[in-house]
Image (cartoon, rainbow, N blue to C red):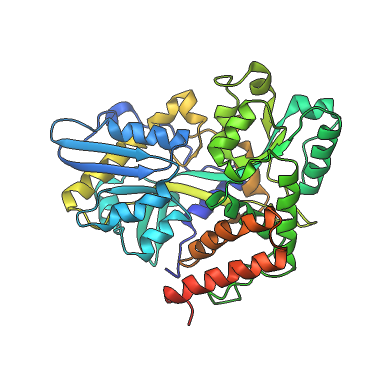
Length: 423
């Protein structure tokens, strides 16, 4: 998995120039009915609104002779490998992103899609095809990134403008707390495990760090940039809910909707629900706004990463089930779904006819600011797991930064040697 085409990231560059080469009129309703006539379809994936929309579209293919199941859950990365390992696989497809496709490829659990694209993917655009070593291994339907979310009313009361750096956000958070406006004004998806590791990845990139020694899988994060990244994570945590290590994206969103936060780094795909008074208040919903990702440590690269989300097809299933699953997705991501205004707001869709909405401006700003793609390397998932397991000790004051980073490197090295990435 050494060569990943830049097709999806080229899409991000198109976003950066606000030039959508695929901005053509949405297709007519000729594809409104699902064309699947037989087969089994079983999908595992994440649970945020855009993915739920895709899952709903797939479910529309259920009929006599066509079995359709979806399992959309925040725990999708804990179960997709096991669920695709059997023969036949429990899941005929996993909805994935930059990071989660790697584990499936490492274990040879997904099939190339070139034949299916040729037969049934006539409406797909080149920038939707995720190619690895010359073979299409996934089809992307949306782009994503984390960026600033803020409460306009709270910042105005504190005499603040939306921060452009993490240092400005920390200073603003302290002022908001000192004024008694909010007790825990900052936050983000800092749950121990995958979420916390992702925040370190963002922060380390923002500090200009390189994860590996050039041309190798040898990790290199126990350095000045690594220590600085941990220090900034701790500063954010000090102004967050004391239970921040339990707050994933869902928990953080709930905190926001409860009116307990003023600023956070959050996924663009999560923004639109935050602007709804459902489960919140009109005051919070109306004052929720977004801006581009922040920089940190005097750097110019945003402390965030560019992402895509898309679907794969299991290797360990029949050709009939693979064809049924692919065709169901073609129904679910047909361009006319974004005629629905609410659906259009759920994501930066990589579909014909997509017109950028206000909720998409943070993702656009990430691309415009030169944000880097999340590292799509076969061994980076091992480092991500090591970070998620070891970083809580530092944030809880059990270890200093150097010891924590040394522990991360040791855990990664053991896993990388076991899987043959290091000698």
